[in-house]
Length: 214
Image (cartoon, rainbow, N blue to C red):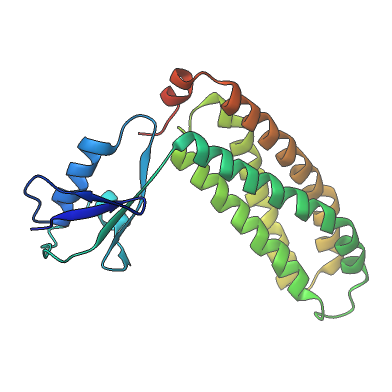
């Protein structure tokens, strides 16, 4: 039976009988997780285990007295702002790179520069992952997210086209996709991220909490 846990790096005594990881999770949820924070990670003896608990699996791992469990608690409002900042910065940096890459792509004679196209594809994948993460913090159906989610679907489509063109070594099509399809979407993403940040910052706490997932 465990005697203590860590909450965001701070040691907390456990005054109730807690024998399994699932019991520890339930106790932390009931005792410490309020409307203004969520559990974003659980590490048991150096191994991340949050996915097993939230995935619906029954996790009856017996805890030893010397087991070390850390629960990371974060504020959803802050997390959403941080995610939006990362998303905006990524879109902005990609947008700055596109014109020169589009020109080079148009002039490609072989696959020497394919790595640069792959970098853009990887950045697009990261952008889509960030949007998915954002939807994990806020309700997918919330009106604030509609423009960003709409752009996400369009970006995913462009990513597919870009990968097809690169696979076929159709560099001029890659250039056209970068300049005519991707660049406008990235500019829109920068603007929508800024708008959503302002909405989150200006929303009253009650209104914001009502938009939280779960």
